[in-house]
Length: 88
Image 1 (cartoon, helix red, strand yellow):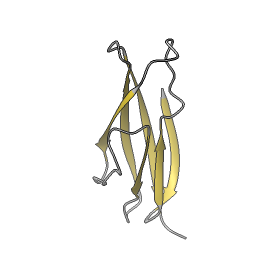
Image 2 (cartoon, rainbow, N blue to C red):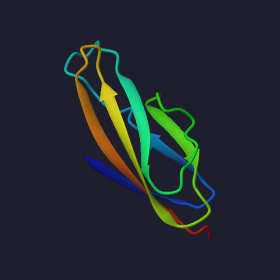
Image 3 (tube, one colour):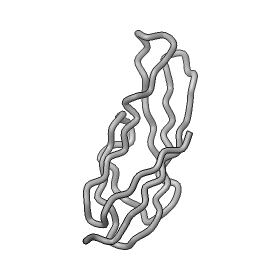
């Protein structure tokens, strides 16, 4: 799945995978965020369901991937595109 959103340059952006679910409802899920495109940003964490970063100053497209893993090792991935726009 690909999700997309936009954020003004210099603003705080939020990446949210907290809606991830597992068939085994009591399973604990782990998260792994990576950035695949755009000016590198500092994520608040790479292992939390919800992470934040400050958008770069130049308009561009940032691409992130989150891998969600359950206790049995089953995984699913999602791609998130963030379009950085010029600040008003």
